[in-house]
Image (cartoon, rainbow, N blue to C red):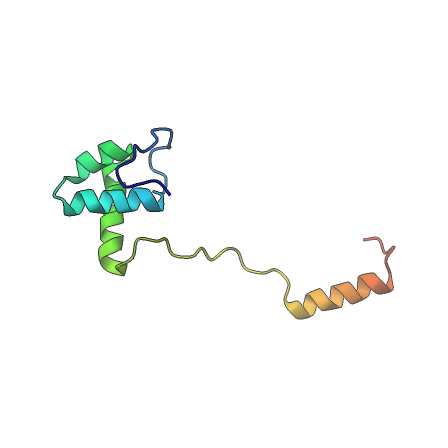
Length: 95
C-alpha cells in the first residue's frame, strides 16, 4: 500500500474505477476543503468520478467497493452431478 502523500501514477485511464488509496486520498482532500475539480486534476480522473466517490462514501459510510455479483450459473448442482454420471458411464459419447 502506498503512503498517503505518495505521488499517484498518471498512467491510469480516465473514467475508470479509483483504487482504494485513490479514494482515501480524494476523501481526505475533500474533507480538507479542496474542490472536486482540484482533486480530479490531481488524480487524473473526471470531476464526476470524484463526486460519485464522495456521494457513495456519504451513502454507504465505507470506502471499499461492493462485491461483484458475477453471472448466473447455467447448470444447477443437480444437473452437474447428472452430467458427470453420464460422462463416467459413457466416456466416448459424441454429440
